[in-house]
Length: 282
Image (cartoon, rainbow, N blue to C red):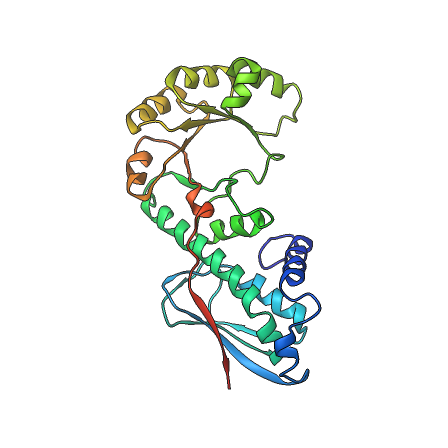
């Protein structure tokens, strides 16, 4: 989908699955009250301040129900909106506007909540080199939308899944015996362009990960003081990622340690949806 950079087939699959869940053979309330050809207008309005995300996806929802829908947005994804702002005006069949409302809002509200939360974290480190990363703590089946929303909020996507980057964590290290063996074994089997990240929990593990040639070294659940020492040990031989209990109040202190990235599961795993309403204009 050109407007988002998202895969159109994947988006259509998500929407079709949601239609099967919510509409199936038809909206029996709307379809038995409203003639098929009746048209109407609707507005989506912000009921809270935040960063909007998901407008092209919501548009696709309505387009699936009414190919002739008219979509007039007043904002674009990534824009800051204030309570009371009219986000978009929609014209089309009454049936499409009502039947698509909940799905469109559910997706936009979640995505906008993620974008809004991400923007808060990004703002905390705006005067540093640090980039805010997301994680795999997303809703199953909606990861592409969750990660798109992170980008709309100014964040950076980490690996998309288990297939596009190596992440050697504590349990992998246990089975391999040590960090060095784990990295060596994996390097033998993967293309050279695949990045290898290693999770570390202490300075000795950081030293071993550096010696093993890791591309990215995760500093997991370390104090700020230990992270600062770890960054000095790494000394630009690899990128560094702070992870674990990365709360908003702690962010500036973590950024000051010199890490390159801070990964935050809370961007997606427990997001509060941004309140948006849709109302028919009679």
